[in-house]
Length: 474
Image (cartoon, rainbow, N blue to C red; front, top):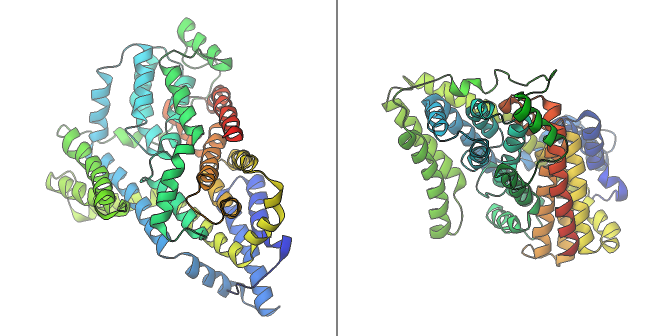
Protein backbone atom coordinates (compact mmCIF):
# COMPACT_ATOMS: atom_id res chain seq x y z
CA UNK A 1 0.00 0.00 0.00
CA UNK A 2 1.01 3.64 -0.47
CA UNK A 3 3.05 4.82 2.51
CA UNK A 4 2.77 8.54 1.60
CA UNK A 5 -0.89 8.95 2.50
CA UNK A 6 -1.60 11.89 4.81
CA UNK A 7 -5.18 12.28 6.03
CA UNK A 8 -4.50 14.47 9.06
CA UNK A 9 -7.13 13.97 11.72
CA UNK A 10 -8.99 11.54 9.44
CA UNK A 11 -6.04 9.15 9.69
CA UNK A 12 -7.52 8.23 13.08
CA UNK A 13 -10.85 7.28 11.55
CA UNK A 14 -10.29 3.47 11.40
CA UNK A 15 -9.28 3.42 15.06
CA UNK A 16 -12.09 5.77 16.09
CA UNK A 17 -14.59 3.61 14.20
CA UNK A 18 -13.18 0.53 15.93
CA UNK A 19 -13.41 2.15 19.36
CA UNK A 20 -16.91 3.50 18.77
CA UNK A 21 -18.16 0.18 17.40
CA UNK A 22 -16.60 -1.61 20.37
CA UNK A 23 -18.48 0.63 22.80
CA UNK A 24 -21.80 0.10 21.02
CA UNK A 25 -21.60 -3.61 20.13
CA UNK A 26 -19.24 -4.80 22.89
CA UNK A 27 -17.74 -7.10 20.31
CA UNK A 28 -14.01 -6.54 19.74
CA UNK A 29 -13.74 -8.73 16.63
CA UNK A 30 -16.59 -6.94 14.84
CA UNK A 31 -15.20 -3.57 15.95
CA UNK A 32 -11.74 -4.28 14.54
CA UNK A 33 -13.27 -5.61 11.32
CA UNK A 34 -15.31 -2.41 10.95
CA UNK A 35 -12.16 -0.32 11.42
CA UNK A 36 -10.32 -2.40 8.84
CA UNK A 37 -13.11 -1.96 6.29
CA UNK A 38 -13.08 1.83 6.75
CA UNK A 39 -9.28 1.87 6.42
CA UNK A 40 -9.42 -0.23 3.26
CA UNK A 41 -11.93 2.18 1.69
CA UNK A 42 -9.77 5.16 2.61
CA UNK A 43 -6.51 3.74 1.25
CA UNK A 44 -8.23 2.38 -1.86
CA UNK A 45 -9.79 5.74 -2.70
CA UNK A 46 -6.54 7.62 -2.06
CA UNK A 47 -4.50 5.23 -4.20
CA UNK A 48 -6.84 4.35 -7.08
CA UNK A 49 -9.61 6.95 -6.97
CA UNK A 50 -13.22 5.83 -7.29
CA UNK A 51 -12.35 2.81 -9.43
CA UNK A 52 -10.88 0.32 -6.97
CA UNK A 53 -11.67 -3.17 -5.77
CA UNK A 54 -12.02 -3.16 -1.94
CA UNK A 55 -11.88 -6.98 -1.84
CA UNK A 56 -8.50 -6.96 -3.56
CA UNK A 57 -7.16 -4.28 -1.19
CA UNK A 58 -8.44 -6.13 1.88
CA UNK A 59 -6.82 -9.32 0.61
CA UNK A 60 -3.56 -7.47 0.02
CA UNK A 61 -3.77 -5.97 3.51
CA UNK A 62 -4.13 -9.39 5.16
CA UNK A 63 -1.30 -10.89 3.09
CA UNK A 64 1.04 -8.10 4.18
CA UNK A 65 -0.10 -7.86 7.80
CA UNK A 66 -0.30 -11.55 8.67
CA UNK A 67 3.41 -12.09 8.47
CA UNK A 68 5.85 -14.45 10.16
CA UNK A 69 5.36 -12.78 13.53
CA UNK A 70 1.62 -13.43 13.38
CA UNK A 71 2.23 -17.07 12.45
CA UNK A 72 4.65 -17.48 15.36
CA UNK A 73 2.20 -16.08 17.90
CA UNK A 74 -0.63 -18.15 16.43
CA UNK A 75 1.45 -21.31 16.77
CA UNK A 76 1.97 -20.64 20.48
CA UNK A 77 -1.74 -20.07 21.08
CA UNK A 78 -2.70 -23.16 19.05
CA UNK A 79 -0.31 -25.50 20.86
CA UNK A 80 -1.45 -24.18 24.24
CA UNK A 81 -5.02 -25.06 23.25
CA UNK A 82 -3.97 -28.54 22.15
CA UNK A 83 -1.95 -29.13 25.33
CA UNK A 84 -4.93 -28.33 27.55
CA UNK A 85 -7.13 -30.68 25.53
CA UNK A 86 -4.54 -33.43 26.08
CA UNK A 87 -4.61 -32.72 29.81
CA UNK A 88 -8.37 -33.21 29.76
CA UNK A 89 -8.10 -36.43 27.78
CA UNK A 90 -5.48 -37.85 30.17
CA UNK A 91 -7.79 -37.70 33.19
CA UNK A 92 -5.03 -36.01 35.18
CA UNK A 93 -7.31 -33.10 36.10
CA UNK A 94 -9.62 -35.37 38.09
CA UNK A 95 -6.58 -36.90 39.77
CA UNK A 96 -5.31 -33.45 40.66
CA UNK A 97 -8.70 -32.52 42.12
CA UNK A 98 -8.66 -35.60 44.36
CA UNK A 99 -5.23 -34.70 45.74
CA UNK A 100 -6.20 -31.10 46.47
CA UNK A 101 -9.41 -32.10 48.28
CA UNK A 102 -7.47 -34.04 50.94
CA UNK A 103 -5.78 -30.98 52.42
CA UNK A 104 -8.55 -28.33 52.44
CA UNK A 105 -11.05 -28.16 55.29
CA UNK A 106 -11.25 -24.71 56.92
CA UNK A 107 -12.47 -21.59 55.06
CA UNK A 108 -8.99 -20.07 55.17
CA UNK A 109 -7.41 -23.23 53.72
CA UNK A 110 -10.00 -23.39 50.96
CA UNK A 111 -9.56 -19.74 50.00
CA UNK A 112 -5.77 -19.81 50.14
CA UNK A 113 -5.62 -23.01 48.08
CA UNK A 114 -7.92 -21.46 45.47
CA UNK A 115 -5.63 -18.44 45.28
CA UNK A 116 -2.50 -20.61 45.00
CA UNK A 117 -3.95 -22.80 42.24
CA UNK A 118 -4.14 -19.71 40.04
CA UNK A 119 -0.33 -19.89 39.83
CA UNK A 120 -0.44 -23.58 38.91
CA UNK A 121 -3.08 -23.45 36.17
CA UNK A 122 -1.84 -20.46 34.14
CA UNK A 123 -4.54 -19.77 31.58
CA UNK A 124 -7.35 -17.21 31.68
CA UNK A 125 -9.97 -19.62 30.27
CA UNK A 126 -8.74 -22.96 31.52
CA UNK A 127 -7.97 -21.80 35.08
CA UNK A 128 -11.48 -20.86 36.30
CA UNK A 129 -13.05 -23.83 34.54
CA UNK A 130 -10.60 -26.22 36.18
CA UNK A 131 -9.97 -24.67 39.61
CA UNK A 132 -13.62 -23.69 40.13
CA UNK A 133 -15.12 -27.18 39.86
CA UNK A 134 -12.24 -28.55 42.00
CA UNK A 135 -12.76 -26.06 44.82
CA UNK A 136 -16.55 -25.51 44.66
CA UNK A 137 -17.53 -28.59 46.73
CA UNK A 138 -14.84 -27.74 49.28
CA UNK A 139 -15.85 -24.08 49.52
CA UNK A 140 -19.53 -25.00 49.90
CA UNK A 141 -18.64 -27.38 52.73
CA UNK A 142 -16.56 -24.67 54.44
CA UNK A 143 -19.42 -22.15 53.94
CA UNK A 144 -17.41 -19.83 51.72
CA UNK A 145 -19.83 -17.83 49.59
CA UNK A 146 -19.90 -18.46 45.86
CA UNK A 147 -19.24 -14.74 45.37
CA UNK A 148 -15.94 -15.06 47.28
CA UNK A 149 -14.94 -18.13 45.29
CA UNK A 150 -15.68 -16.34 41.99
CA UNK A 151 -13.65 -13.31 43.12
CA UNK A 152 -10.62 -15.47 43.93
CA UNK A 153 -10.90 -17.29 40.59
CA UNK A 154 -11.18 -14.04 38.64
CA UNK A 155 -8.32 -12.33 40.48
CA UNK A 156 -5.87 -15.14 39.76
CA UNK A 157 -6.50 -15.78 36.07
CA UNK A 158 -5.48 -12.92 33.77
CA UNK A 159 -3.49 -11.23 36.58
CA UNK A 160 -1.13 -14.21 36.66
CA UNK A 161 -1.05 -14.62 32.87
CA UNK A 162 0.29 -11.10 32.22
CA UNK A 163 3.10 -11.52 34.75
CA UNK A 164 4.58 -14.53 32.92
CA UNK A 165 6.17 -13.39 29.64
CA UNK A 166 6.31 -16.76 27.88
CA UNK A 167 2.63 -17.68 27.98
CA UNK A 168 0.00 -16.87 25.34
CA UNK A 169 -0.66 -13.39 26.76
CA UNK A 170 3.01 -12.48 26.54
CA UNK A 171 3.24 -13.84 23.01
CA UNK A 172 0.14 -11.90 21.95
CA UNK A 173 1.33 -8.60 23.45
CA UNK A 174 4.85 -9.06 22.09
CA UNK A 175 3.30 -9.59 18.67
CA UNK A 176 1.38 -6.32 18.94
CA UNK A 177 4.51 -4.48 20.07
CA UNK A 178 6.54 -5.92 17.21
CA UNK A 179 3.79 -5.13 14.70
CA UNK A 180 3.92 -1.47 15.67
CA UNK A 181 7.58 -1.32 14.63
CA UNK A 182 9.46 1.83 15.61
CA UNK A 183 12.68 1.12 17.51
CA UNK A 184 11.60 -2.48 18.23
CA UNK A 185 13.29 -4.71 15.65
CA UNK A 186 11.42 -8.00 15.63
CA UNK A 187 9.72 -10.34 18.04
CA UNK A 188 12.74 -11.21 20.16
CA UNK A 189 13.22 -7.59 21.16
CA UNK A 190 9.45 -7.19 21.61
CA UNK A 191 9.41 -10.09 24.10
CA UNK A 192 12.29 -8.49 25.98
CA UNK A 193 10.47 -5.14 26.09
CA UNK A 194 7.30 -6.78 27.39
CA UNK A 195 9.25 -8.76 30.00
CA UNK A 196 10.91 -5.58 31.29
CA UNK A 197 7.53 -3.82 31.44
CA UNK A 198 6.27 -6.41 33.96
CA UNK A 199 8.13 -4.57 36.74
CA UNK A 200 5.79 -1.60 36.20
CA UNK A 201 2.61 -3.67 35.84
CA UNK A 202 1.22 -2.65 39.21
CA UNK A 203 -2.48 -3.43 38.81
CA UNK A 204 -2.24 -7.25 38.52
CA UNK A 205 0.32 -7.30 41.33
CA UNK A 206 -1.99 -5.32 43.61
CA UNK A 207 -5.01 -7.41 42.57
CA UNK A 208 -3.15 -10.60 43.48
CA UNK A 209 -1.95 -9.11 46.78
CA UNK A 210 -5.47 -8.02 47.75
CA UNK A 211 -6.85 -11.46 46.88
CA UNK A 212 -4.14 -13.10 49.03
CA UNK A 213 -4.90 -10.82 51.98
CA UNK A 214 -8.60 -11.62 51.62
CA UNK A 215 -7.82 -15.35 51.43
CA UNK A 216 -5.69 -15.21 54.58
CA UNK A 217 -8.47 -13.18 56.28
CA UNK A 218 -5.97 -10.39 56.96
CA UNK A 219 -8.07 -7.90 55.00
CA UNK A 220 -11.70 -7.77 56.12
CA UNK A 221 -14.54 -8.26 53.69
CA UNK A 222 -15.95 -4.99 52.40
CA UNK A 223 -19.21 -3.71 50.91
CA UNK A 224 -21.48 -6.37 49.43
CA UNK A 225 -18.84 -9.09 49.84
CA UNK A 226 -19.20 -8.74 53.61
CA UNK A 227 -22.94 -9.26 53.32
CA UNK A 228 -22.40 -12.35 51.15
CA UNK A 229 -19.92 -13.87 53.62
CA UNK A 230 -22.18 -13.13 56.59
CA UNK A 231 -25.10 -14.78 54.81
CA UNK A 232 -22.98 -17.82 54.04
CA UNK A 233 -21.40 -18.25 57.47
CA UNK A 234 -24.47 -17.40 59.57
CA UNK A 235 -27.36 -18.66 57.45
CA UNK A 236 -25.44 -21.43 55.67
CA UNK A 237 -26.45 -20.05 52.24
CA UNK A 238 -23.56 -19.93 49.79
CA UNK A 239 -25.94 -18.29 47.29
CA UNK A 240 -28.43 -15.54 48.02
CA UNK A 241 -32.14 -16.28 47.71
CA UNK A 242 -33.20 -15.79 44.11
CA UNK A 243 -29.67 -16.07 42.72
CA UNK A 244 -29.19 -17.67 39.31
CA UNK A 245 -25.93 -19.63 39.55
CA UNK A 246 -24.00 -19.91 36.32
CA UNK A 247 -23.31 -23.62 36.58
CA UNK A 248 -23.36 -24.89 33.03
CA UNK A 249 -22.00 -27.85 31.13
CA UNK A 250 -19.07 -25.70 29.98
CA UNK A 251 -16.06 -27.00 31.82
CA UNK A 252 -17.84 -30.09 33.14
CA UNK A 253 -16.03 -32.21 30.55
CA UNK A 254 -12.82 -31.38 32.41
CA UNK A 255 -13.76 -34.09 34.89
CA UNK A 256 -15.72 -36.40 32.60
CA UNK A 257 -12.74 -38.60 31.76
CA UNK A 258 -11.61 -40.36 34.93
CA UNK A 259 -8.71 -42.79 34.71
CA UNK A 260 -7.24 -44.82 37.52
CA UNK A 261 -3.83 -44.84 35.86
CA UNK A 262 -3.58 -41.05 35.48
CA UNK A 263 -0.23 -39.86 36.84
CA UNK A 264 0.42 -36.37 38.17
CA UNK A 265 4.11 -36.90 37.43
CA UNK A 266 3.93 -38.32 33.89
CA UNK A 267 0.79 -36.58 32.60
CA UNK A 268 1.04 -33.18 34.30
CA UNK A 269 4.38 -32.36 35.92
CA UNK A 270 6.61 -33.58 33.07
CA UNK A 271 4.80 -31.53 30.34
CA UNK A 272 4.90 -28.44 32.55
CA UNK A 273 8.62 -28.97 33.22
CA UNK A 274 9.21 -29.38 29.48
CA UNK A 275 7.58 -26.00 28.81
CA UNK A 276 9.37 -24.10 31.57
CA UNK A 277 12.65 -25.94 31.06
CA UNK A 278 12.77 -25.35 27.31
CA UNK A 279 11.98 -21.65 27.71
CA UNK A 280 14.57 -21.07 30.44
CA UNK A 281 17.33 -23.14 28.85
CA UNK A 282 16.83 -21.54 25.44
CA UNK A 283 16.93 -18.08 27.03
CA UNK A 284 20.22 -18.65 28.85
CA UNK A 285 21.87 -20.69 26.09
CA UNK A 286 20.65 -18.97 22.91
CA UNK A 287 19.63 -15.56 24.29
CA UNK A 288 15.96 -15.84 23.31
CA UNK A 289 12.96 -17.74 24.63
CA UNK A 290 11.80 -20.60 22.38
CA UNK A 291 8.17 -20.38 23.47
CA UNK A 292 6.54 -22.04 20.45
CA UNK A 293 9.08 -24.85 20.50
CA UNK A 294 8.48 -25.39 24.23
CA UNK A 295 4.75 -26.02 23.79
CA UNK A 296 5.37 -28.13 20.67
CA UNK A 297 7.70 -30.40 22.67
CA UNK A 298 5.17 -30.69 25.50
CA UNK A 299 2.37 -31.58 23.07
CA UNK A 300 4.65 -34.06 21.27
CA UNK A 301 5.63 -35.73 24.55
CA UNK A 302 2.10 -35.95 25.97
CA UNK A 303 0.66 -37.22 22.67
CA UNK A 304 3.17 -40.07 22.52
CA UNK A 305 2.71 -40.81 26.23
CA UNK A 306 -1.08 -41.02 26.03
CA UNK A 307 -0.90 -43.07 22.82
CA UNK A 308 1.59 -45.46 24.45
CA UNK A 309 -0.72 -45.81 27.48
CA UNK A 310 -3.68 -46.45 25.14
CA UNK A 311 -5.53 -43.45 26.61
CA UNK A 312 -5.75 -42.19 23.04
CA UNK A 313 -6.40 -45.40 21.06
CA UNK A 314 -5.50 -44.30 17.54
CA UNK A 315 -4.37 -41.44 15.34
CA UNK A 316 -7.94 -40.39 14.53
CA UNK A 317 -8.67 -39.88 18.24
CA UNK A 318 -5.44 -37.90 18.60
CA UNK A 319 -6.41 -35.67 15.68
CA UNK A 320 -9.85 -35.12 17.23
CA UNK A 321 -8.21 -33.94 20.47
CA UNK A 322 -5.95 -31.60 18.54
CA UNK A 323 -8.80 -30.14 16.52
CA UNK A 324 -10.80 -29.43 19.69
CA UNK A 325 -7.79 -27.58 21.06
CA UNK A 326 -7.39 -25.55 17.88
CA UNK A 327 -11.10 -24.73 17.81
CA UNK A 328 -10.98 -23.44 21.39
CA UNK A 329 -8.40 -20.74 20.52
CA UNK A 330 -9.71 -19.61 17.12
CA UNK A 331 -11.47 -16.46 18.44
CA UNK A 332 -8.15 -15.26 19.89
CA UNK A 333 -6.35 -15.87 16.58
CA UNK A 334 -9.01 -14.01 14.56
CA UNK A 335 -8.82 -11.09 16.99
CA UNK A 336 -5.05 -11.03 16.72
CA UNK A 337 -5.12 -11.13 12.91
CA UNK A 338 -7.47 -8.15 12.72
CA UNK A 339 -5.28 -6.30 15.21
CA UNK A 340 -2.25 -6.84 12.96
CA UNK A 341 -4.28 -5.62 9.98
CA UNK A 342 -5.49 -2.41 11.62
CA UNK A 343 -1.93 -1.71 12.79
CA UNK A 344 -0.80 -1.86 9.15
CA UNK A 345 -3.62 0.47 8.10
CA UNK A 346 -2.91 3.09 10.75
CA UNK A 347 0.75 3.02 9.77
CA UNK A 348 -0.13 3.57 6.09
CA UNK A 349 -2.45 6.43 7.01
CA UNK A 350 0.28 7.99 9.21
CA UNK A 351 -2.00 8.07 12.23
CA UNK A 352 1.01 7.89 14.54
CA UNK A 353 2.53 11.05 13.03
CA UNK A 354 -0.72 12.93 13.56
CA UNK A 355 -0.99 11.73 17.17
CA UNK A 356 2.58 12.81 17.88
CA UNK A 357 2.17 16.26 16.33
CA UNK A 358 -1.10 16.92 18.14
CA UNK A 359 -0.77 15.41 21.59
CA UNK A 360 2.89 14.98 22.51
CA UNK A 361 3.34 18.59 23.60
CA UNK A 362 0.19 18.51 25.74
CA UNK A 363 1.19 15.74 28.15
CA UNK A 364 3.78 15.14 30.80
CA UNK A 365 5.15 11.59 30.91
CA UNK A 366 3.37 10.81 34.21
CA UNK A 367 0.04 12.15 32.97
CA UNK A 368 0.46 10.18 29.74
CA UNK A 369 0.97 6.87 31.60
CA UNK A 370 -1.96 7.51 33.95
CA UNK A 371 -4.23 8.51 31.05
CA UNK A 372 -3.19 5.36 29.17
CA UNK A 373 -4.23 3.22 32.14
CA UNK A 374 -7.60 4.97 32.42
CA UNK A 375 -8.48 4.85 28.71
CA UNK A 376 -7.50 1.20 28.35
CA UNK A 377 -9.58 0.39 31.43
CA UNK A 378 -12.59 2.10 29.91
CA UNK A 379 -12.24 0.26 26.61
CA UNK A 380 -11.78 -3.10 28.32
CA UNK A 381 -14.74 -2.42 30.62
CA UNK A 382 -16.98 -1.52 27.70
CA UNK A 383 -15.97 -4.34 25.39
CA UNK A 384 -15.42 -7.06 27.98
CA UNK A 385 -12.09 -8.11 26.45
CA UNK A 386 -8.63 -6.99 27.49
CA UNK A 387 -7.11 -8.50 24.33
CA UNK A 388 -9.35 -6.31 22.20
CA UNK A 389 -8.38 -3.27 24.28
CA UNK A 390 -4.70 -4.07 23.76
CA UNK A 391 -5.18 -4.31 20.01
CA UNK A 392 -6.93 -0.94 19.97
CA UNK A 393 -4.58 0.91 22.35
CA UNK A 394 -1.07 -0.26 21.39
CA UNK A 395 -1.11 1.69 18.07
CA UNK A 396 -2.11 4.85 19.96
CA UNK A 397 0.21 4.53 22.93
CA UNK A 398 3.55 3.30 21.59
CA UNK A 399 4.22 6.19 19.14
CA UNK A 400 3.70 8.73 21.93
CA UNK A 401 5.87 6.71 24.31
CA UNK A 402 8.64 6.53 21.70
CA UNK A 403 8.45 10.29 21.18
CA UNK A 404 8.96 10.88 24.91
CA UNK A 405 11.84 8.39 25.00
CA UNK A 406 13.63 9.75 21.95
CA UNK A 407 12.73 6.64 19.94
CA UNK A 408 14.44 4.36 22.48
CA UNK A 409 12.54 1.12 23.18
CA UNK A 410 14.41 0.38 26.41
CA UNK A 411 13.44 3.62 28.13
CA UNK A 412 11.52 3.11 31.42
CA UNK A 413 8.71 5.31 30.12
CA UNK A 414 8.07 2.84 27.29
CA UNK A 415 7.91 0.03 29.85
CA UNK A 416 5.48 2.05 31.99
CA UNK A 417 3.25 2.81 28.99
CA UNK A 418 3.07 -0.86 27.98
CA UNK A 419 2.40 -1.85 31.60
CA UNK A 420 -0.36 0.75 31.81
CA UNK A 421 -2.05 -0.73 28.74
CA UNK A 422 -1.73 -4.27 30.10
CA UNK A 423 -2.88 -3.40 33.62
CA UNK A 424 -5.68 -1.20 32.36
CA UNK A 425 -7.03 -4.09 30.30
CA UNK A 426 -7.08 -6.36 33.35
CA UNK A 427 -8.73 -3.68 35.52
CA UNK A 428 -11.46 -3.19 32.94
CA UNK A 429 -11.94 -6.95 32.75
CA UNK A 430 -12.32 -7.24 36.52
CA UNK A 431 -14.90 -4.45 36.59
CA UNK A 432 -17.01 -5.42 33.57
CA UNK A 433 -20.14 -7.58 33.60
CA UNK A 434 -19.48 -8.52 29.96
CA UNK A 435 -15.91 -9.69 30.51
CA UNK A 436 -15.33 -13.21 29.21
CA UNK A 437 -12.99 -14.10 32.08
CA UNK A 438 -15.47 -12.77 34.65
CA UNK A 439 -18.24 -14.84 33.08
CA UNK A 440 -16.03 -17.94 33.16
CA UNK A 441 -15.19 -17.25 36.81
CA UNK A 442 -18.91 -17.13 37.60
CA UNK A 443 -19.35 -20.39 35.70
CA UNK A 444 -16.44 -22.06 37.50
CA UNK A 445 -17.63 -20.91 40.92
CA UNK A 446 -21.31 -21.57 40.23
CA UNK A 447 -22.08 -17.98 41.22
CA UNK A 448 -24.78 -15.59 40.08
CA UNK A 449 -22.85 -13.50 37.57
CA UNK A 450 -24.02 -10.03 38.62
CA UNK A 451 -23.49 -10.97 42.27
CA UNK A 452 -19.91 -11.79 41.34
CA UNK A 453 -19.40 -8.51 39.45
CA UNK A 454 -20.77 -6.20 42.16
CA UNK A 455 -18.97 -7.95 45.01
CA UNK A 456 -15.65 -7.93 43.14
CA UNK A 457 -15.90 -4.32 41.98
CA UNK A 458 -14.75 -2.64 45.25
CA UNK A 459 -11.57 -4.72 45.30
CA UNK A 460 -10.87 -3.93 41.65
CA UNK A 461 -11.41 -0.22 42.33
CA UNK A 462 -8.99 -0.27 45.28
CA UNK A 463 -6.25 -1.83 43.13
CA UNK A 464 -7.10 0.48 40.21
CA UNK A 465 -6.97 3.70 42.26
CA UNK A 466 -3.68 2.67 43.88
CA UNK A 467 -2.21 1.88 40.46
CA UNK A 468 -3.32 5.24 39.09
CA UNK A 469 -1.73 7.04 42.06
CA UNK A 470 1.55 5.17 41.57
CA UNK A 471 1.70 6.08 37.87
CA UNK A 472 1.17 9.74 38.74
CA UNK A 473 4.11 9.89 41.15
CA UNK A 474 6.79 7.59 39.64
